[in-house]
Length: 158
Image (cartoon, rainbow, N blue to C red; front, side):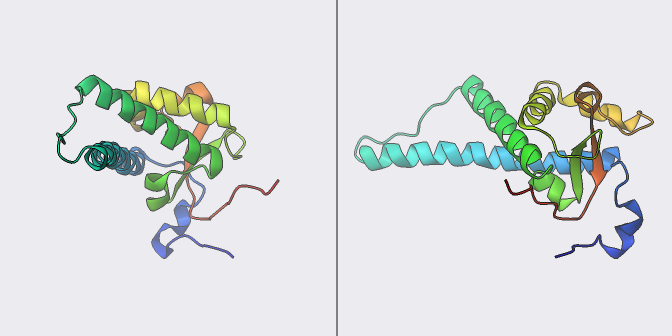
């Protein structure tokens, strides 16, 4: 099965992604993680209600705990996406893929390091706006590139 790029974007296939595309993909990914955090909160609330319906009260959660949960989910989400197919949901929507310097997929450890750097230092992503190679600080440190790629490129079967 061959998936081609949208007609207007075919000339961009394989080229390095710009800061706007990357920012929009990252914004979508952030929304996915926020929805996941809210989902976890409501799931915990539902379990509490199920176990003690007469004494139910909404759980009070500190900002620090919600932030920690969000960071953990963000790092896990990014790591899994980049290690499997090189893309997260946001990158998939915008036709982007994270690849190693050899245009290959990322091993799990590199995907994790890149995800941790993105979660801990998100401002580094804006370096791609001034970089001649459209690379973020995280790309420079982990030796990755974000390219336009609309093909499926499923992980190889082992």
